[in-house]
Length: 502
Image 1 (tube, rainbow, N blue to C red):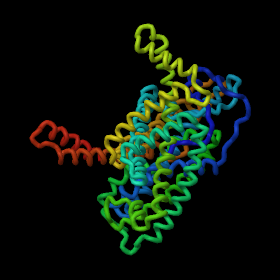
Image 2 (cartoon, helix red, strand yellow; image 1 turned 90 degrees about the horizontal axis):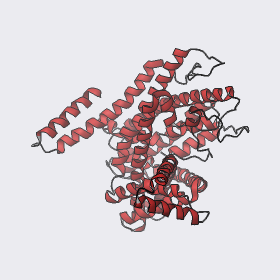
Image 3 (cartoon, helix red, strand yellow; image 1 turned 120 degrees about the vertical axis):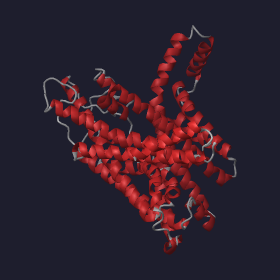
Image 4 (cartoon, helix red, strand yellow; image 1 turned 180 degrees about the vertical axis):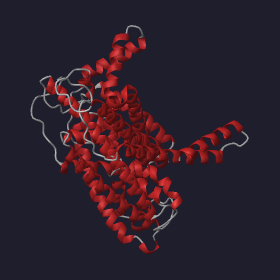
């Protein structure tokens, strides 16, 4: 999963419109309308990322056919959720533009973010929950990315894992901090093109070396549930849906087509990669197909595999870092403003503020602003420390984020937002053109089936999380101190609850 885009977008959010500031920062020029092909390229390039490295390890026990069925099932679920996000996003976009038109303004190119969508449909509590979950997920996956990158760098260069983690984080993170979105865009495009080319080469060469006669076509069906969190993480591109809707100016037919085609191509790629990878490991559960190719072929293949792994991690790291840094910088601005107001009360705050003020006054033009430096330092320091302390954390963290964070954010929240939006639309009925009011227009539904389908989608995502809770606590009970009765009983109770939910 990668979350970066080459689109140059303003920093203002839907909050500006909601607070009544209808025109700040907007130009009245005709906006460029994107194409479906552009959306497809964006989704494909963003989906093929770090998740591809974890996929074969997670699916080895299930076998090729059961894990392929799981890929198709999760893709269907996520496709429905993506369409729901687009439905909500475009509905809010239309309400905003109608209100702007009522006040003599034109279409706004500002992206309506996921937290803005939650605020508009679920209230401030929904926005707070979404924002908090997004921050937590981003920090957690950064730990996974740094951990895997340090492992690849360590194997390729002979450096210790801790040093490799620091080099990757400081090197790539520093480049993004100093270079900004322009450098990040060029770097991400180069990595994405290289990644796709290497992906094709690896699948073709892997298919040639694989022993298809002894491949594990059907492993353990019982192992399928444990594959779902990684599959969920691998196929997610939903943080791009608001960008896609803005890029296509809210044209729902193009949005639907772009999402469908753009998500289908990575699905085909992952199905091919999963089959080849599992044929290569020859039933060895937990084996890394990339290492198998490297050991059997050696030479140039080792370099290719290292480059492939780092490119996959790099694209995901760039997207997550940029998204989280842009989210944090306005909040850091507020903190700096508060420091300015309270610097007379605390000598430490005064010295810190003066140091930042000196940096801003003397820094060269190419150096990043104080808030950018603080944003990147604060968001990368903790993930780097955790990755250095626990170097083998990539797969457990990826599984955790896929099972809990992704299922909540992109499995449960979209149906809830769509349910609330449709409910409000039904209450207000048809459009009232003279007096703008929120949800006063009939919503164009991208996903048919009504509340039954919305309930089924939410229940499916909850079942995924409940299954992981069951597995985690069953394992905890197995390793718990049985003499500690309260702990054992508590764990057993939670397990029973998970069984009911599941």
